[in-house]
Amino acid sequence: MKVFLLKDIENVGMAHEIVTVSDGFARNFLLPRSAAVEVTARNEASLKGRIRVVEHRKEVIASKTSMLAEKIKSLKVTLKAKIHDGDRLYGAVNASDVVDVLAQEGVHVGKSQIIFDKSIKTKGLHTVTVKLSNTLKPSFSLKIVAE
Image 1 (cartoon, rainbow, N blue to C red):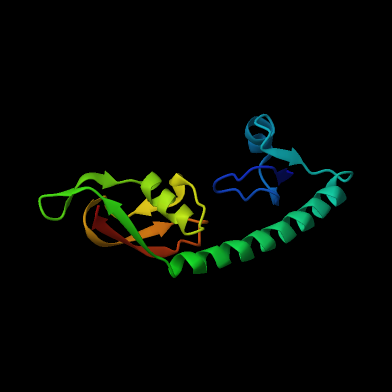
Image 2: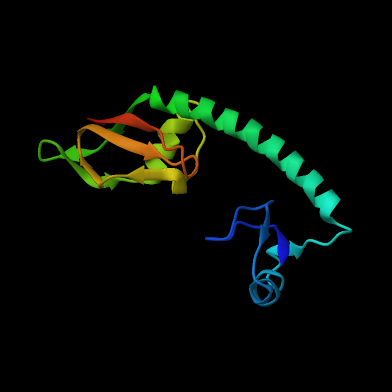
């Protein structure tokens, strides 16, 4: 059965794609959850028109995202934190701290997009990754200094 996906379905396809799946999977899983619409002769043309519009939007978003990635790669951000015992922080740096510092630099991302290789508990230079999409994950330098 051919279906038009309304949501991303893992191991099946991305939203706004026409894919072929088994009849049972479509009737028992995709259609009841409003994750897909059955493609018929009547609605196939309109769905293909929707695909073209979505593709254009994806291209625009991809170009904006790549520009944001270049800006993030060039950043060298400094964060002030309370420090004790030489170079240890009182608490680890968390994603909301990084989001606040990035917002001051003009880069607006969500807390869930910040990825740490390991928790940051010491002063110095650390690398932080921002997940903009599945394929685009720029990193920037974060310097922790004493308040």
